Length: 122
Image 1 (cartoon, rainbow, N blue to C red):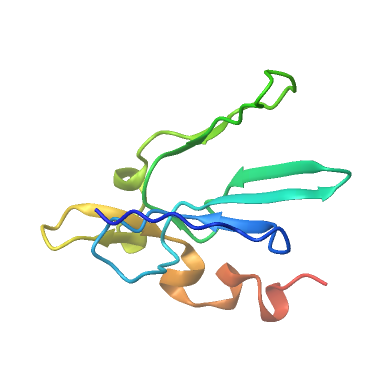
Image 2 (image 1 turned 180 degrees about the horizontal axis):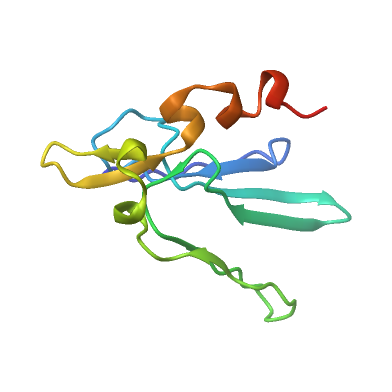
């Protein structure tokens, strides 16, 4: 499994994390990203887990302050939902097992699923 650590410069306060331990392209949309925006407004940090583009692994973000103050609530998608996605959205590994799920936009590339064209918003 590949692991990496990087220092994020203060000028780049938004980051996205995803697993790169699978034998797939370095960036693949069918992943479960954890997104962080650090101190953009009045020093408040924001975080979320997004399933907009797809899903591959359960994720839990449990923030903790250094001094124990604050009231951050953990956010999670901890169930492995790969097997319950429709077949046409499933991404299968070399052994035939489901390893990820694509969004309908990625799988079908149609305006109605991608919120584009007449299905877009202003």
